[in-house]
Length: 202
Image (cartoon, rainbow, N blue to C red):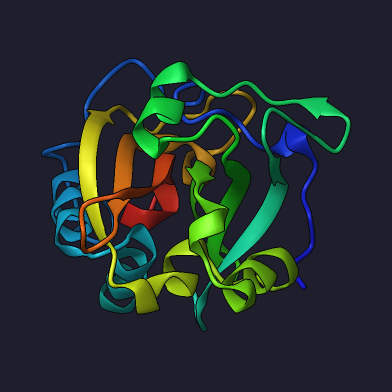
């Protein structure tokens, strides 16, 4: 079972993107660029699969990519805390009460990304739901047997400088909104993701 993090440790994807500069063409200490990362994400069936491949290529962390759960629930309220879901997300998922989770994806000691995910848990098997609730396996790995594919809806690049008291490795350098589609085209999940500076060696 993965340890839960305090909600104060998690920033909304758009909130900790810096607003000055652009790392899209600049090389990091490890030689990778944000554009390289974007290309890797575009090629992966899920963000989890793309991050695992990226980390192997760049030598980031060790072991499997794991999800540290910040908060999770179903519908608009969970754990005594209000959770607001945009109406557009409900429309795309064709439900008013999707399951949701805030997570941080890590490999070893390296924090890779943070995400807010809304998804149709009623389309998952019982074993998949248990895995999401009881293990540190990321959503993308859990649902991989369903054959999903990732569709990018929005992408924003920003300078990875310290924000909200974070150092460069933990500052957001790329924010994306993506959908995870089933083979028949139904939207299984909608994710707001922030990719962190450690991914390009900051």
